[in-house]
Length: 448
Image (tube, rainbow, N blue to C red; front, side, top):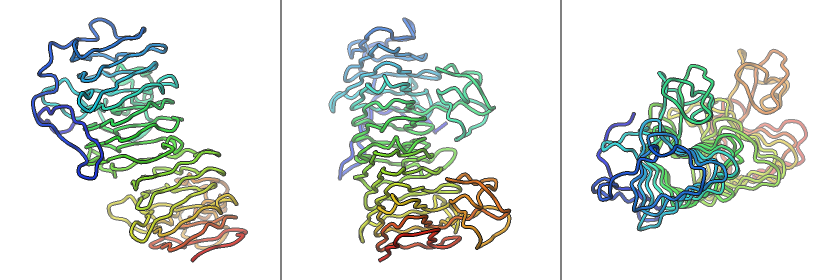
């Protein structure tokens, strides 16, 4: 749990050139309002359209309020919702929490001395929940965890049911256990993509927002993530990236029990499928925790100044188009996520197939890559880094892995297979293996 601290008014943070956030120091958000309404004393399930008004607030949650399919819960501007312990809101229908600049909506801890993880959070589950809309909303002090050990990884079970059969957890779909904890996030999405506009997520014990499974592209604009212990945004599938990536503010995230580069969008893997394009309009940091794939006829465009971090068996597999076009003043960097980087800290970039020839890298640095596997350090033979000839050894999970001749898995900082991207002002350094390796037949290699 995070350190106790005095209660603050609802925090509304809007990215601007002058300030990332504005903290209004005063009494608790609910002090000037009447007696709280205990929602759970009446019913734990919203089955018909329901409105929470400012006149009846603040609203207190001591349970999991479920917004059922077909029902809409509307929360009026200025309403404060307080929760504690195992409480949260589980949305299978529609949640409309649309505040204003002058009357934001706040979800916060009941405690006068709030801590990270004082309550669970908001869970949007299923395609119908994609119709939910949150604007000018602050979600604070959530991300409650359960269990004797504080694991920060594994099957994502916060509300999903994989790690959540420990005593004290009563969330939706709970069941199954591998002996670890239940992990919830301040906002958890499962096959749902609500609209978030001017939403601040802060002081979560875990990630700020976690997209679980095949979540459609996120609909996030002008959103701020502050002082969450995990990642600001964590995606299981690269396909959940917003079509236009921009207008985010990340500050002070990742300082929890398991320090990590929290001021970033973490991506476990998945596939950006054919026909889809993601364009980043803002320089952000991305953390690769697996092998996300850019499929043929899909495009991922990074903004100048972006940083892509990776570690261990992580890398980027490009079968479509990667546009990483930095500038002299705002280069793009692919590097180790370690605070003490070394050669071979991560695998690298693999351009595979003729569609990948449309990729363009300019003013880019690729460093600390070229990870190798296996007991013997061979530097020749069938090239199997990502191609699959030498990569069936334990610990390698890259694309096309399979087959073995008893040697190691061997990757290079940049590996090309029947692909010829354009490289202009590209620096490849501190690789454990080759800087650039062209495997099989390359139509044309354009390096300037």
